[in-house]
Each structure stands twice: as structure tokens, then as C-alpha cells.
Image (cartoon, rainbow over all chains, first blue to last red; front, side, top):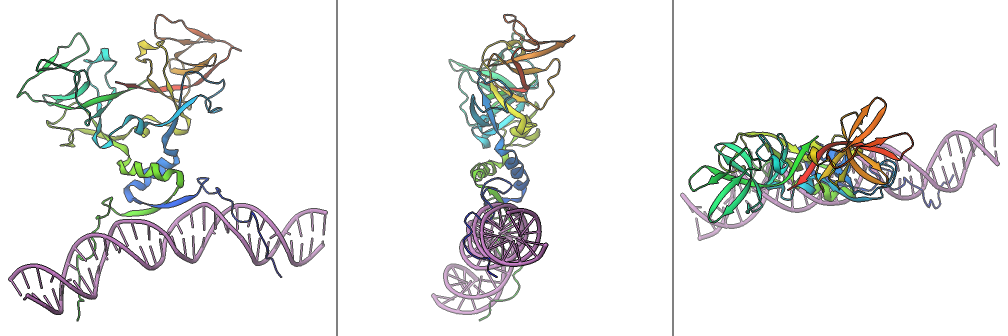
Length: 171
Length: 171
DNA sequence: GCACTTGATTAATGTACATTAATCAAGTAT
DNA sequence: ATACTTGATTAATGTACATTAATCAAGTGC
């Protein structure tokens, strides 16, 4: 009663697991287990970015003309520990394409240089303005003709929180 | 030579690990190990969202007035497997706040209803337009007076790929 | 010959376990 | 007394291991 002998190709095939590839046990902090499982399930949120020229048919049908696969977190956030979001209120930057209720991605690690759009706290209120530095004078410039520039002087309570890198506008 | 006896409070303290909390071994597909470690290192990219009123000082100093902690992937992408990105070329939707080189987040799972801004493939070229349905006629409407509407008729090679949900504009 | 059963083979899976690290307390030397 | 050493205690950490799953091949009955 022998069943022995070679079994080339026998055994559970590789890549038959739930992920279709080999796995590795990694220790994760308990609070991250759920988010990570979601992250893995969504394949790391790598979204295809299409350029302008495309093949006919639906985007699912072809991967031609895919410029890249982007994770929005990685693409939009350079310095995760120094980045925060601000919801826009007011229309003072409407001419810069920043509309009410848009979400701004703000990086505290970037230099608040002349010409940059920044988030500043003025009178306990956050505001978006373009930073204008000129001959020792510093202004927060609105981009809406109905608003006036704010001058930053020694001693007035204005803090620049960071530099706006991206605007997210919901349709 | 006894060193025995009770040792209340002895032992390595809880929360002394690299994550400051208990961990759990989870199997991950090998290709996701690196992205997941990055994801965990960045604490799941939970970014604080500030409203308009704030305390003085820098945003790092206080967590008052934080409306929420958002993961941009989760916030922007409802249907990860049906979502893709398109880089905008052309200015045909400039009046809708969609500028050249912006990145659009597009969801194929949403209904392309009248009035929605959609991505369509026209002559092997992707285009953003507002969908206009009226009396059995369907139009792709630009929002820029220099461009003309495109009518979608039976038999012409126009495919609607999905509905634009968000616009990302780099500053 | 053909279907079915049984054992062999190998990968996937989850977790138990040995090791390491960090702390406490008693013993020891100064 | 004070500092140092040694063993005890308990959590963190990485991985080995037992179990399960999926396949192959020989044996068995008809």
C-alpha cells in the first residue's frame, strides 16, 4: 500500500492565498490594525492617473495611457507630521481659485517666502492670504478686490501657520 | 540567596514599545509590507482639519479647534476600485474652477446624471465637461465661452468614463 | 477505462513560543 | 547609607511551528 514517489507540481499552488502572493507576519500597533487592513484591501489606494490621450472604451478596460499610479496621501503630503488641513471660509482669495469650503493642504515645514499663499492666524481667526514682503514691510494680500491687504507689524498678534500647497475643491 | 518575593509593578512597562501600545502580528502580502510600514509610520496620514476660529500660537501647540482628523484617501475616494485620476489639459472648464494641470478625482461608480461634471473620451482624447440632458438630447457643455457644446448622438464615439468628485489644484 | 478514495506534497495562515528588553527588589560591597 | 550586582518579573518582538488548504498521483472497485 504505497502512495509514495515524486510529486512534481503537487501541493497547494503558490499565489492561491487571499492576496495572490506570499505573505509575511508583521507586528502592528492594535489601533492601526483596522486601518491597515482597509489600506491593504484597497491596494494602498494606488489610483491610476490618466493623461489626455486615451484608448476608446472604459478606463477599466485598458491600462494604456496610464501616466502613473498615485497614492493621494503620498502625492499631496510631503511632510506628514508638519501638514494640516484648513477649511476655507470667506472669499478673500477667490481670484486665486480658492473658494469657500475648499480644503487647503498646508505644510508648516515650508519656508513662508514672498509670493507664497499662506495660512495666518489673525485675531483668533485663520485666514488665507498671499504673503507679500517688500522693503521690511510684510503684507497679507487678498486676491479679491473687495478685500484690503493686512500689514504685519511688530507686536500685532499675527502668526503664520504654514504654506498652502494644494487646494481641494469638491464638485 | 533568595531574590524572590512579590514584584508588583515589575517588568517591562506597557506601552514601551516603538508604537507606544500593544502590537499584534498580522500577515501582509509582501508587496504591501513597505507601503504599510510607511503608512503606520505616518500614523495613517490622519491630518488635523482646522476650522476658521483658532487659538493663538502655532497649530502644533494646540489641538483645540480641530474639527476632525482626515485621511485624504478615505475622504476623497469613496469607491477605491472605481476611482481614477485625470490630469486636466485645456481650459474649457475654467469657469467651473477647473484649471489646466489640475488633477481630477473621478468616480466611475456614480451615476452620470444631468448637471454633473463628467470625464468623457471624445476622439481618443479625454475631456471634462458638464453633462446636459434635455429632451432626449445629450450635450457635453464647456464652461468657457470660447468653447462650444458637443452633442452626443447614437453612433459617435463618445464614452463617459465617470463623474468628477473633486478637483486638486496645486499652488 | 473511469470514477472515486487515500495518502503525499507543498503553500497559506494564524498564533504559540523563545528571545530580548525594561523594570523592580533583594542581596552585597564599600 | 549608598551604589552596585544579581535574580525575578513582565511586556515587546520576531519567527518557528502546527494547522489548514489545495493540489498531485497511486491504488481500488466496477
